[in-house]
Length: 217
Image (cartoon, rainbow, N blue to C red):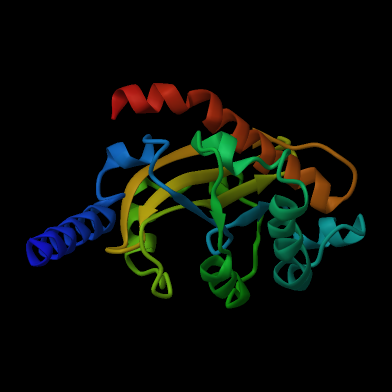
C-alpha cells in the first residue's frame, strides 16, 4: 500500500510539473491572473527620436551617446523605485510580478545606432510581425514562462508623445502571445521625467483596456 501511495504521489508530481511547463503557452494565459508574469523591462533597440541631435544638444537635453548609458537605466530604475507609479502588476492585472531586466539590459547595452531622425513618419513604422521577429531572435537567457515587456518605438517632443508595443511573450519557445501598440503623452521637467510620463501613460492605458483585450482573446 505504501508503494502504491508513493507511486501515486510521483505521478501527481509529474502531472503538476507538466501543467507548470504548459503555463503561458496560449494567449488566454496572458489574461489569467493566476499565471505568473515576469516584467522584462523596456527594449529600446527600435527607438527613434524625432528631431535633430543638434536641436536637443542646443537645449542641453540629450546627446546620442548619453541615451544608452544614462537614460535607459534611469527609466528602468523607476519601475523599482516608484512601483506604485510605474505599476506593472496593475497593468497586467496581477497581485504581483517578478522583475528581471537582464534580457533587455543585454539588448540595450549593445545599441550603437544613431537614435535621431528628422522624419516624422519614422514615429511608427513597426508592425506586429516585426515584434514577432524580434522576439523570435531574443535571448531570454534560460528564462521560462510568461514575460511582459515594452518595445519602445517613436519619441516625438513636437507632439509630446511616445509609442511602444506592450508585449507578452512565452519565453520558453520565444513566441509572442499578445502585443498591442500604444502611445502615451509626455510631460515633466527634465529629459528623464518628460519621457517617463509616456511609459506611465502607456501602462495605465493598457491596464484600462485589459478587460477589452481579454474579451477579444
